[in-house]
Image 1 (cartoon, rainbow, N blue to C red):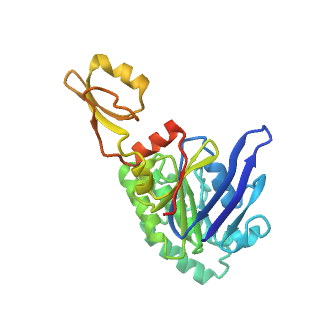
Image 2: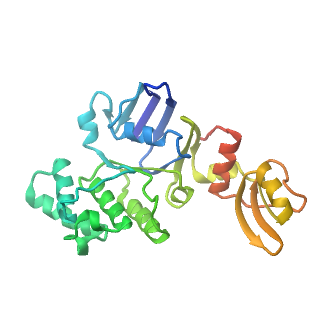
Image 3: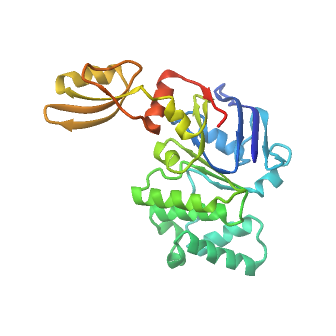
Length: 297
């Protein structure tokens, strides 16, 4: 395994227990960290990025002890935080060159070559002379992943990378991540957007209230929701009662009522029919029922 996490805890000075006894092995490839806002994802990501220290526990990052060998561990990590900021005075290529120098690329010729290659890879070469803070949101996220990739890291960590992006840029960003990952590269994608996980990751974990509640593949967690998802067309007068009693995933207006997708152990309405679950349904089912499941897949 590329990353081995053992008995990881994080307790903040105010007493908040943000991470609770996390034990996790993360292989090479695309790995999804899914959970609602406030689940502890950003805390865990900042620890893995060697920016924060845990209260207790250990992390082995490609052979480096993250607590005792932080400098060496950082050399194999590329990180794109959720609140990534740009220096207003830098043009796009200048910013990426600066990021390359910070990562230890001291040979100016090799650095220039790497910067140009990366700008082409992320589709920003034509705007290389534009000031970074003047780019669109999608372009900024692409530049963000470029600075994370510039030194060919073994581990690429991205925190909520597609928040605020339109669907086209979201797909483009996910494709960039997929292309960046080789056989011996680990990409950790932390998000609350289910679609980012279902379309990109073969392995995932679900974090809720600081605890891991699922470890496995998207297909394995989806299989746990079979028979728990329903489709029903209900009258306008029935909608409020159902919405208060059950988790309603989608609502589509139809003549004189609503078409609903509902997560429930029991049949939620006399006209409800079983519906094939997807990852979003399974995600809601696990959170609503406080389920825990570890698989060997």
